[in-house]
Image 1 (cartoon, helix red, strand yellow):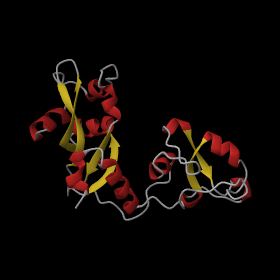
Image 2 (tube, one colour; image 1 turned 180 degrees about the vertical axis):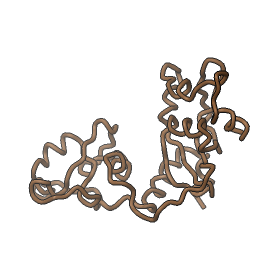
Image 3 (cartoon, one colour; image 1 turned 30 degrees about the vertical axis):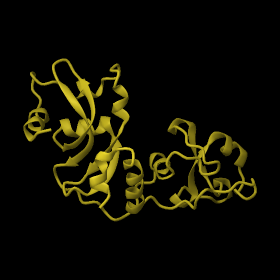
Length: 202
């Protein structure tokens, strides 16, 4: 997508279609493309994040980022069509501190790849819960090292027990979701999108 296009949509007038006209399209047959993962690069081309295509389109239309690679899908508005990105690059360099990501449900599930850490089943986010390895009622805290993705059946089985007491075992020791972890997950996700490879595998 050219800089001219970015400039025109960054300052919409009456003749331009608003951002919401694109990102609100759910009825399109390719509407699922709004949820596809998009690789986010810093202005220096360093991979720094993964976001949903919906968010990536907003960033491009606001002139915050530009599309580097496309995934082949289109979203249509009344008078215009926009290509759905696969890789976007921020137009201004963003300094990324060398520290863990924010502790949140979303990031715990991303770190654990939507996989129950007790039975190994991969599930949608809506079917997963967070489990305190050491129960809160027994002194456990809400930290990276004590929170894991867990399916509802395993959560009920474990209850207010330590894993060993419930005869359950963690797949891996939970750790903080740091920059190294993020890049590792990006590489795993990138295996399904060849367009990511030149930005991740170097």
